Length: 330
Image (tube, one colour):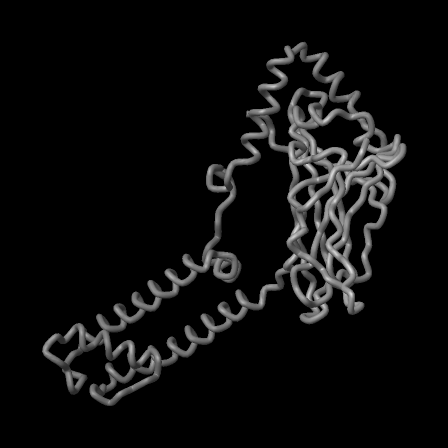
């Protein structure tokens, strides 16, 4: 399996360097590989990168669940989180019921099923309900009850905090267009992506980056993932109320100039769009990202306008047109 390395080439905002493929081509020439072998290696690496995280076995990296419990609790799926809380709750009550069962003589009001009665007594004690049907007596029983009450208050506080953190995580309701468009008007070609704010609030100080991700061959013959920034006409948007079209002009110094889509697909190239901004209502930083393969690129098209004027002077914003495009005469 090829080495899993990543390299990043910085680029000045608004200007991208010329395509640098000579090193990669020279490396292939020195390896004297056939075109079929080159394609096989690219596709093998691409399939490996697209597999789910659970398909990989990490060696030398330990998942410290107890040392990073908060992160696991916040990022776990809701179903996993809820099941974990329920199992923890039941386990705690069973443990304390067994502790109470070690001294049953210290309790009054036990039912016919002693262990089940002690389990429900533990549930009442853990939640500090205390119906009064059973009562502890003696040092042993009251000591266990005191410990469980303290443990119950701590557990309630921790679970409440985690549930609040899960709900309070900032999430940007930004949606990206289904396709990337390459529009040619006159002698100028541009690559466009539309991003839309799906909330009624405003995103402030929005910064956008578009990176070209490619598999290239290093001098020693290993496949590496390389990222190059594509300069945008406008990479900073003071506020996003509705929608905005990100535009990269394909000039002679662009990485996409005179490059065939088939060649980019062969190298398993992708476009990665990242957006960060500040939610005006929450005052928190939000972010979103989208990845496009080059088989999602459509030529000689442009986005349909989402905004139109009404007879009464108001403006209509049609969010159903987010993905709509129209052909442009080439």
